[in-house]
Image (cartoon, rainbow over all chains, first blue to last red):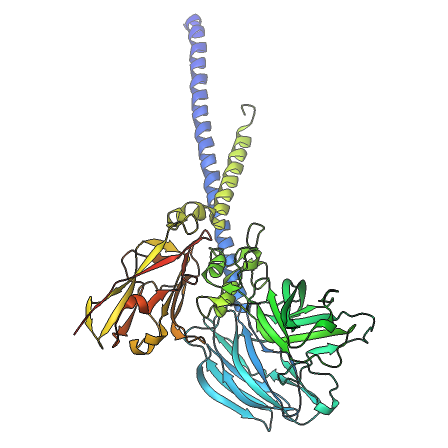
Length: 420
Length: 204
């Protein structure tokens, strides 16, 4: 017989124990499951994060490779236009802007209309001093070729490949000196042609007899340098001047550069310097233009005696004497509006030292002002706490291009601009 | 938290893990970690925190303390301090009346300072004012990562001269252009340079 009382008394205890054991087992299993699930999720996430990072790095590499593959070296000519009298010569520079590429060599093929002008001479410019193919000039067909290599270092940034001396033919016409499509540019790390023909030069030949514009300088140049652009107002003793000059490092239009313009002349035996601070705006590569009047009412043409020396001091450049006007041309009278075109000289940049401390020289302080901003990134964006003048090419970042500009002009330890 | 279900907790842990991983990955990608910690040991030894409060001296040391007229002797430029700089520039002025007799080279012979990512200006020339000067500049193009390393008592550069047939007094012949010579640092400060020249006794 079964002792129910005993059974009844023991069953609950056993059940309770079993439930307790089951609960404990279940808890252990649940905890183990929870831990395993968590570990699984974390492992999954780690693998996922690794994959995402790998994908990001791969896509970054691809974009860098793509960017490198897309980069081109701009080749152009300077100046972009020249006006010559018959039989007059002029020099055209073939220039290159390599960006971040290292230009090692180039084969240049030039085309032109030899009925308008001829090429007299081709002179490679450093660093392109290794002549791989001697310059060949065919003034019958209007074609010139040469191939040069860079030594000891490749060209990085902006530079000149060669100087071309042209001579105007006795005609009254216009023609272009242009790069042929067969022109090639080689860069380190690349096996393809990197040339991007970015500009030619227009040569205009005007017979002297048909050029009424006075030439105000003593130096023989057919480019009008001070041209009256409106009828004079006889009641206005002042002279309204607009101006154009060429500044290194300016590669885009609409870049504003504060510029100091000075005129030095002698009146009654006393040397006088009139200085004007104006903001010039770029309208094409390297060319800065001031469209509003440069002078103020105090500049009285009637009190000025030639010669007049014209100096330019851009905010991050060296003061440069651009022109001496030996005689005031007859066409320029009080009340005239005159444009002074002093674009034949490229004004050097590199005076970037601390703000309000321009010393009109390029030295190690200026170079360090740029290099100290360079870091891990290729480009250091210009921020409010930085010296904006270190951005020599005005592209919003400080990089190796800015350094190239200053090193190009750092020909000695202390490169000084002109004193007034 | 006690009211949250196990699934919610897992999701929270997973989400937190993702956030942490993304933050770590982003920080590494942006270089924050490396910039903050890894390169901290590469801070330059800026001895001149205040502009030009201390001077940096370069000695011109001859290869021999004695020499005869007509003999070649090499002068080395030796700094007195060890430091890291953005750039170093030395302009040595050479009295023009001696320049021809010294048989000066066209440039310095630079020592091991010439490294990757460094630009060198190295000329010994005569300018339009008939001044003869020797320019040496060593410029780091990335001074934060690869500064110009200058080590005390180790030659920066050297040049050989011929002892001229005159009273040879190097202190009269050579001088430093203080205006052009300088050493610059990462903090946009610079220091002047002093020059000391060790004499050579001329033998018969």
